[in-house]
Image 1 (spheres, rainbow, N blue to C red):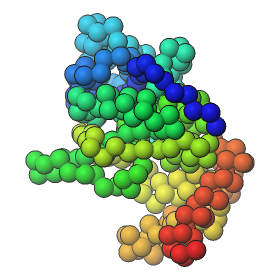
Image 2 (cartoon, helix red, strand yellow; image 1 turned 90 degrees about the horizontal axis):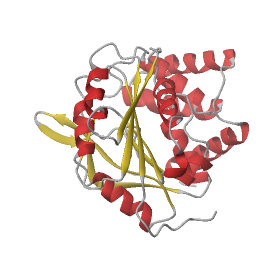
Image 3 (cartoon, helix red, strand yellow; image 1 turned 180 degrees about the horizontal axis):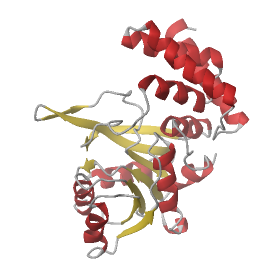
Length: 293
């Protein structure tokens, strides 16, 4: 892999999918306007909102030339595919040749005023960095505390910032459940690094998954399938989730959904080679963590 060293400042393209975010979106867009780093463009993809989201977006697009919007028809709210579809639609409206960093941000986060500044510095000073982000915090009893739903070396879905060469090299985001873990595996396989800057705190206003209609067991079963896991690794992953819930019935419910997906041969958004790579890496991690091999 050839890393490109940038001597000048890097320009951000920030795409924000938004569906019925009238209570949250202004916080996100205000925090972007207040950034110390100013060289960015924001595209808000209005994904069929039925509330005041379009009016809120218009307040920014009318007064700040860095903000643009597109409107999509309403689509079914399913984890993963909907948000990536909205992101891709926003991305397609822009000339990527004029940008260096591509961001997928959620419409319900608040960024510290130095957020883009620190992300830009990280990319400019470390040409091997492919994906950079901070840590998610949620409000509990009046205090902002670390969300804790993922390891601190993984950049969560609400605040992805990719080096453009990395983003294009891995073929962009996959329109599927598990996209925000698939990207990590793909970029690592290409030799890029995923970096979390723990000093950058991102406030998450809305609890993730609150508006999903899918059952938790169905979610995991579908997630393990669309991640491309073979049966053995899917069963191992399902058993780990069942142990967390202390429920054997939860294990069988996850497996049922996984097997249903297999029997229907639902389309995967990854190639055979990518699926093989993902399984090999998951197996390697399993041996290292649990079998001490």
